Structure formats: structure tokens, C-alpha cells
Image (cartoon, rainbow, N blue to C red):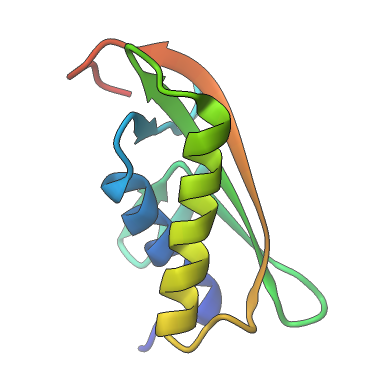
Length: 111
């Protein structure tokens, strides 16, 4: 079964987080910041289908010590996701993109 546009955008968001230096995905203390994707979950990405056919993305990340300027990192994440969505033919489906920083981790420290 092909992935929905919501899941496809969540996967692109996951790739944007993985490609961005200074951050790591966070599922939160209870593990709720994730999107189901078949037999796995996409950590740190909450993809919400909006009534207008667009998908809102909420990225939940931790900064890696020493933290870079967080505003710049948030802008980089949004820009990467927008470019990826456009390249995948999903630019018109991508809705608002929020970036939330929850903690600061030592390099190599798990979620």
C-alpha cells in the first residue's frame, strides 16, 4: 500500500532533522511525538492532516551541546522541509511547520 501524503511529508521531515547539524529528534517523555509509518514510527515528527488537504508538521527536537543558534536551526529545518516537499511534488500539500526545542543533549546521548 502506498504511503499517504501525510506520511510522505513526515518522512521528509525526518530526513530534514537527520540532515541538520546540532539537533536530534525527540519523542518526549511519553513517546507521543511521533507519526506512525506502517510497522515503525517516525520519531520527533507529528504530521496532522488539515481539513483543507494540507498537512501541518510539528518537529520536536533536542539541541546537541554546544547548541547552535536555535532560531537559525529552526529556519534551516523549515527550509529543508519546504525544498524537499517541493522536489517531491508535495509543496502544495505542506501546511504550517512548527519547530519546538525541548532539551539540550550531550553529543551521542540518546533520546
